[in-house]
Length: 196
Image (cartoon, rainbow, N blue to C red; front, side, top):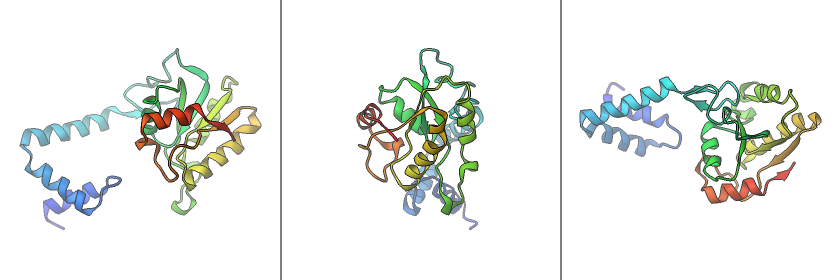
């Protein structure tokens, strides 16, 4: 694979949800753009990559540490919403219903893919619960097999600590992805959460 266009296509294929045809279309699109546009795109990728890092508290991606949510004194510190990925935080924020803090796991339990509790930010979550200030954990993992398994695993760890554990309500399609769900559906899911 010495063809530069095929190398670029292969790089686009590494992006989530991008198949061969879309990757090839994106590669041709980028090559046909004026040099200034291509350079601006590449600079944006570099800037985002170099300026974003994990918040030392919630493990979300941010340009500051702590992130804007963890450092906001107006947020309810007695509630933590646990999500799979950083983009899920933004999706829930767009619902305008949730006013607590977040914790990002950076994945879900998936034994077939070799992802166990050690690969997730579960230890960091448990450390946050030691001060006794948190009264509720809302688990907002995707409603698929791995998301459900992760939710039940977390509930089993957290309930003995005397902390209420709830799960966002159904309303999200089974097998759906929180990061791509509309804000109205997410608002209803957060508002109508249930205890596990």
